[in-house]
Amino acid sequence: MQLQAFWSGTVSAMTKLLYEEIATRLATLIEQGTFAPGARLPGLRKLSRQFNVSVGTVVSACALLEAQGLLLAEPRSGHYVADRLDETRAETPARPEIGTPAEEPALIQGQERVLALVQAHNDPALLPFGAAVPDASFLPIAALERSAARVRRTQRGRVADYDFPPGALELRVQIAQRMAEAGCQLGPDEIVVTSGCQEALVLSLRTVAQPGDVIAIESPTFYGILQAIESQGMRALEIATDPQTGLSPDSLARALKQWPIKACVLMPNFGNPLGHRTPEPRKAELVSLLQARGVALIEDDVYGELAFDHQRPWAAKAYDTQGEVLYCGSFSKTLGSGLRLGWAAPGCYCERFTYLKYASSQATPTLTTLAVADYLERGGYQRFLHATQRRYRQQVRRVIEAVGRYFPAGTRMTRPSGGFVVWVELRQGANVLALQKRALAAGISIAPGPIFSSCGGYERCFRLNCALPWSPRIEAALAVLGRLAGETG
Image (cartoon, rainbow, N blue to C red):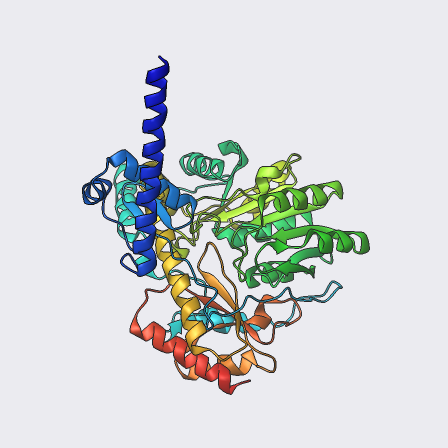
């Protein structure tokens, strides 16, 4: 027995050394560029033959490289080289610093610029870096069309009828299952289907606040949140937000002591426009801080399923122990913005929220709701998500590298770990509104920083949409933007 244990331990040690050796050899090939960022490695059996080792040894080697951040595993597809940005390179832009927003509530201003921005998205002559809308090539259009045809064929009478709140049970069941991935244990009866996340945001504000109330927001924040606040006659209070980790709990605590804040709107997972990801302990801290003050949290999580490492971060709603978090989600960033299909999990406010949904728009489009439910039920969504996450990771990396190559010295830029938008901060003296005007003349749309602020701040910042298929035309447009940025500041 002792001899058997000795040999067992010896073989185990040899196997360990062998898989580490294989991992080192693969890492060397990656560093040498044999396997480029985003490239798929040969299959496990092929690698086992190449290295003359067992498949199990290759699996262990790949798992080690995954833990080191060199590889990403795709279910039913294989292992891919991670798109890691080399921040030591001289041309890689530095990260932006935390902004210094105004320290008092304000009525929203300057949002009329947004209409021109979204209208420009429909101009085929313009490159749409401005609106955060995925290109059609990133969407499962054919699969959704098949689901819609199936629903029209099998549920013809139902498709012609109203889908009153809270919405089709089939879809709410699928949403509840998706939200379990975000740490939220919810039943279908706790979910209300809406016409996009924007409606969910507006209804959430109406549910917990009144005209004139103060709403705390990230700074900068998505302009749709600002428009929702403005449409209800409420005032926005910008809170300092770290471009990497999100809203500062210390800044929020000070604001809660100073102002009668009624609600707080956050995008903790790959927030728009910064792309920040709030660490899990900070999410829990923010939820606890707001609940201690009796302040409702409205969470916008439209990018939550687009993590580059395929690890879905938990929603702030997962830390809600009192039902005070009104969660807002949407399929706009994954299945298509034209669906106009979102949802809310309003917690203890569910009854009031459901009534307001009915009073404002009565129902959601029945065909769209049932088609998406059918698509989700058939089980291809997760596989589609993994492929899309990988593509967005590649696109964001390419845009960051292009800005580093073509933009003037002193340019700063965010490093999102999910979603598909990046935030660019130009050097001192730059005028982003002048840049936007010149870019439009050159056939390029961008989203200027002032529309992400309640009082028109961030005058030398802008957001770029990366959900565009990479091409020489895209790279040339970024080169033009870089040249114009140098000329406007």
